[in-house]
Image (tube, rainbow, N blue to C red; front, side, top):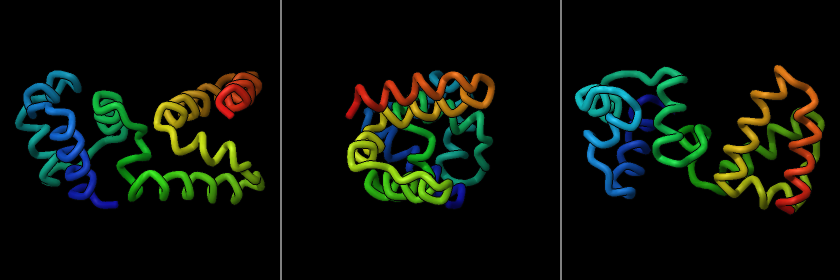
Length: 129
């Protein structure tokens, strides 16, 4: 996905939420001009900046790289299958929930540093399903 497409998704989400570029800029701690350049694809997103936008717009970062929620769910399921894991129907439904995806992303980051978080993630999946 190119920078222009990501910027367009940011603009669409911002408009849907009723935010101005000034308001969004304050939330992500950038200038209004920089937010405008990012939305118009004139400047590239750094991963940390994209994470700030995702948090401010209440979507998981993966939202900017896939088309539609179902595709996102399918892409994640394919990635899991590529790792030798077969996601259940219940997990596939949970993957369609943006809040669950944000939780899973946080767990994945923590897992790298603390392997014991896997049991917490499994318990959360059981609660969701």
